[in-house]
Length: 264
Ligand SMILES: C[S@@+](CC[C@H](N)C(=O)[O-])C[C@H]1O[C@@H](n2cnc3c(N)ncnc32)[C@H](O)[C@@H]1O
Image 1 (cartoon, helix red, strand yellow):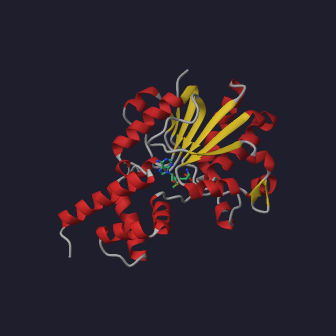
Image 2 (cartoon, helix red, strand yellow):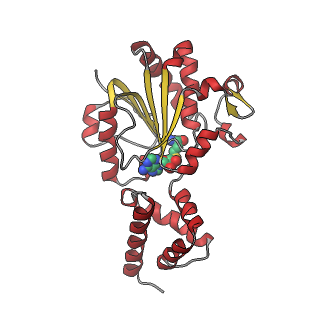
Image 3 (cartoon, helix red, strand yellow):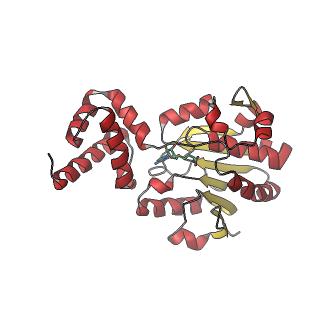
């Protein structure tokens, strides 16, 4: 039996080890989230203390990958929260009319449903002009990025997507080349790296910051504001709210759908 203090020290030692060995900045994530996810892996392997789990990681490289998958929660769907994408349409149309080439960032894209959703929306709202759109799809999780590249999806991924859009833009559960061509997949750690490009017209970062500590969220929001072109749009997840200095620099134009714009 371990005391709460020892347990906490062992937890800190474990997360420091994961950060060092695998480059996941554990200190940026909420302890509650980390503990819940690590507990899932410990139960799965029948291990009862953080120290024993740490030893297991040393001897089993596959468990490290399982743990990283568990820590980077990557649940997603095409057109997740359909009403959000409907609300985004007019902003995308305006951006398409205002700028010759559109740079879009899907940050924390998981297995790719989000960036391909944006690509479909761009094709729907901009027609031929969508060819001038580039969508950077980034995530820290290697497996998620492989799935994004592979772009082969199970039925469960489509439950929120309007059927006519699926018929128009997918064959055999894969996005058509006109959709895929708009998306560039790359590894990127939001906690450690600068944005892949300067001056995006649209940044979509949904259901990612929710797992971060408050300070890490605030830092990231500042990065997003800097990375937005004047007139650009930021879309967060439904339960995520911009705060801190970044909040002063953006206008909340749709409180329900968490859409913000940067004044020109
Ligand atoms: C719940 S998914 C969100 C997927 C999609 N944005 C959506 O809302 O449907 C969270 C994603 O954030 C990614 N993530 C977590 N920490 C990250 C970091 N430091 N840098 C980049 N991506 C990260 C995870 O790997 C995971 O794929």
